[in-house]
Structure formats: C-alpha cells, structure tokens
Image (cartoon, rainbow, N blue to C red; front, side):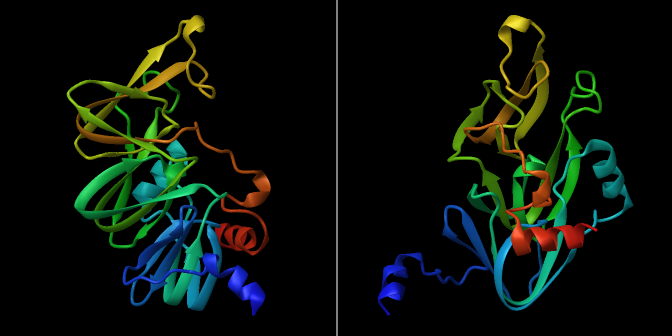
Length: 242
C-alpha cells in the first residue's frame, strides 16, 4: 500500500534489549518474564497479554515519605507477555543502564525502571532549614534500565571538585559520587528560578556528573491524571490511581 510505504519511516524498531527507544520521545519495553514500574498514565499503546496495576509505595516507610514530602512519581506495575509503549507529554526520554550502581533523580522526571531496581526518597542536606518540608529526590540503585524524562535535550555536566549550582527543577539526575546541598539568595534583585519563591539553588559537589534539562519542568493539566495525554492512557491512569 502506498500509505504504508509513506509511513515506513515511523515503523517500530526491534532489539534484543528489554528497553528500547523508538525515537527520542517514545520507549518500547519488551515484557517476557520481567516486570517494570512506570509513571502512572504513561502507557500510550501495548500488544499482547499485558497487566497494569497500581504499584503502591513499596512499604509503609516509603508511603509515609511520599505523603510527607510529595516526592516520588505515582507508579504502576506492568507485567505479562508482550510489549508496551511509554511516553509522557512528548518529552524526550533518556535511557540509562545501571550495573550495581545508583543515581538520584527528580521524581517528576522518572518514566520507568526495571523492578529489580530499588528506590527510596532522600532529603537534600540543609533543605529543611530553608524550605518548609525540605527538598527531596528519588534515589535508584541496583542493576537494570532506568528511563528518565527531559523537557528538551539535556546537557551532562562533569563534576570534579568545583562546586556546581543548578535550578532544583532543571536538574534531572546525578551520579552516586555527587553530594547535594542548598544555596539560597534572598536578595530580591538576584532572583534566578522562575518557579522558586526565593532564589534557591541546588549545590552539587564531589566527583561525578549531573544531567540538566533546558527547562524548569512542565506542569501537567489536572485532566491528564498525572500521565501522558488524555484518552485511554489518562483513563487507565485515573483507574489505577483510584
């Protein structure tokens, strides 16, 4: 068919890996004796016998942390046999593979990860003295794939001794060798962040790397249920979210 030939450039790609980018804004995950966790509402299509269920908080301790801090994406478990396509607001997807390693990320930028990877919520040092409730991020550790969202193409900044500063919502993720703290400047003439009530910067030091997006993040419309778009994906997100 002529139409099929015209659309051939968009044909899905195959790979031996369980996580595979179809292009910069869509991820395909092959399900075969594996289970993943993904951002609630991020499913845009699937094939096969695939099951979706609310992932919960992974225990009372983490549930309490999420309730108090507001950090951590609302997750769903995806299992079965088949393939599932994930995306969120047409944001770019950055795919990394951990090998007995750990990274810390902004919970809003977390799209999906292997179920073998453990996660927890960590507080940024010194944040509670500046912000009511403090500043928190999601810590991921273990072995497997992690898919992160970025609002635009990010830049990786090497950190080696010199202190680096970033807007807390522009910093997507950083390596385990990096330590974080908070720097503030309450001088009204030196406001930096668009969305910060005062000039708040994330300070990073040590040795490792930082991934920064060219944005302070997107805000999803309430009708989207915390996930990508409306329609079936948004409906499933709302059903799983209760």
